[in-house]
Every structure is written in structure tokens, then in C-alpha cells.
Image (tube, rainbow, N blue to C red):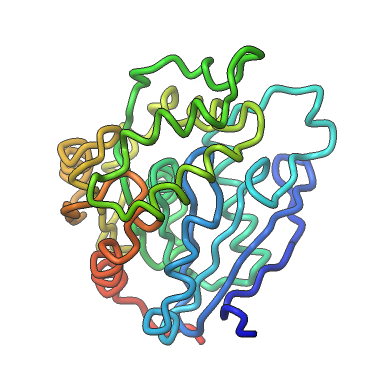
Length: 283
């Protein structure tokens, strides 16, 4: 029997005055990289990167499930409230987890809503990080769908979410990884995808903050899939153009969930993004 080189542990942090039990997976040694999953999913999206022997030889990756996601439970009393993710709560969660892990200016890599919050952190808390890899990220994306469909008594929210995102997976994605990606959305807790999309489609505060990002201190690189229908290459290029010094790469044959849907296709683009961060080694 051979175990994967990935370790999973729990830590407790306080976010907006409430205790949150957070599940974290980690692997590798070297420069720390904190990885953020997409809306309605969890850390399993990063499993291929955490199992990459070459990347983990020089980087120590940390990926965690946001509260309400994956193995991170909702806070006590969740049954009496509506889950709606906010920018402030998201920022505080990322900073609290990074601090609890004892990370010294890690690279922050986030996808979709994780990419959006990475750019918010680049604008507001750049001193806490060594660089930002914003994947499938743009300044703002208003909803082109009714998010209330994802939490109704007459519809399975997880299956509705998987149906929506299925169109955002590249046709070049291996069939097995396509379905592994969709399975994560099928398992999403009631109302969780809707709560994430509330943040993603309603908070446009990043637009006015992009010019505050100083890439001479912390590099910013955007990655976007050529087949992404939600955050299109045009959206990512527009966002990068609003950040002086930011760079952007369009990933051919990839969609909105590149590290999960097509790991082999994503790897060279992600390795290049890591190289662009130019941070000192952290052991």
C-alpha cells in the first residue's frame, strides 16, 4: 500500500468573531503557496498539484476548504442563518488561515472566486504575500443566471450547480477529470454555491481598487482558460490591463476549472506562473 504524499489536518481560526474549524491539505517543501478553490467546490480541485513531485520539490503547497465547504464545517448555529459569502469575511478567512499556518509571505494562488479574492488581497494586503496567481479571475462578473435556482426545495442544488458549470469545462478535458470536477459541485452543501455566487456576482468593489495594486512589490499574473465562458479571456485581459505591471496568459484547451478539469494541460501554465513570482526561498 502506498499513501499519497499529501497530509490533511484541521485548524481552528476566528473569523468575524466566530470560531471556524478549517480543513487543510499540504505537501512539499520550499516556497509556500496558499491555494484557494472555486465557488461551490473544495480543496480536492488542487489534488494534482499537491501530488506533483517536481513542483513539490521546490514549493510547499497548502490548500484549504473554506467554511461551509468540503471537510470544513459551517459555524455553530448555521441552521438558523443564510450563507452569503462577503468580501470582508473571505479576506479575513484567508488571512486567518495563513497566519495560523505560520506562513511567511506565501504566494497566493486562487481560482474563480479564489482568483477574485487574490486580487482584492493584492490591493488591500499585499504586504502579507509574496505574489499573486489569479486564475479565471476578473474585476467583476454580473450573473447571467438566477442564483436562487441553487437553493430551492424543488431542485437539487448540487446537481443544478454541476449542470451550470459543465458548460464551463473545456471539451479537451479528460472525461474522468470532467466528472470528478462535476462531482464536487454535486456534493456542495445546501445553499453554499448560491452563497458563493452572491459574493462573485454582486460585489464590484474590486474595480475601483485595481489601480492600487503595486506589482513592483508583489507580482501579479492572471491565467485564463480559452474555453472559459464565465471569466472570458477578454475579461481577464481587461482586468490585467487595469493593473500596472500585471501579466496575463490565455491557456489553450482549458476552461474555468483548469487545475481540476485538465491537470496535465494546466501544469505548464501554473509552473510558469510560479516562476514569475520570483520570491526568495522559504524552507
